Length: 250
Picture 1 (cartoon, helix red, strand yellow):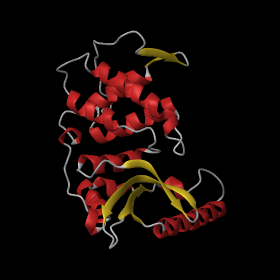
Picture 2 (picture 1 turned 180 degrees about the vertical axis):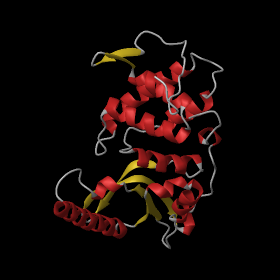
Picture 3 (picture 1 turned 90 degrees about the horizontal axis):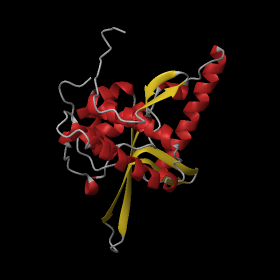
């Protein structure tokens, strides 16, 4: 196969189990594919790919994260061990960082890249699918932070919830049906999202929302996320160099 968007990679360190068969086609295993993506792709794309593969592999539930947590530790340890089989290979530092921060609770590439921007540009490590009790039931933030400071006259520690969410077009548009049904679906989705946003606001969440084009300007995106933190808990940025883009990757 040839094409301008096709790039060949040669891996002399394949081992038993790295190649499996699906529907009669030989493909690399989940674990091997995660390692290859972490080594070869730009960090934002690598994190999105590894998040997605972990999600398929572990089938997590955001309401019971403890159910996949132990297995995630074991899978991550195995992947890190595999990386060390090729000392000196280009991209190892970035690959370690990708595997360290990958999270199967991410529900879309857009969410993964939003979280990547926060991590790479130096915000504190966020909670994926952060749980927030509200008067409309429990809601989950794509990316969230819970900060506690002693800020009340009686010395109580106050909690600040900050959230960032990615909205794709599919959220407001069904895949099929008449134009009238499309309009009704969009109106219902917009109304449901307003009810949810109002409930999060009453629960004290400082929320910023992002769509695809916002992710094209990481500096502006992270500035918006940081500005959502109330002044008493607004963090300094401490970029993570291992997660920054590097030349030579796809």
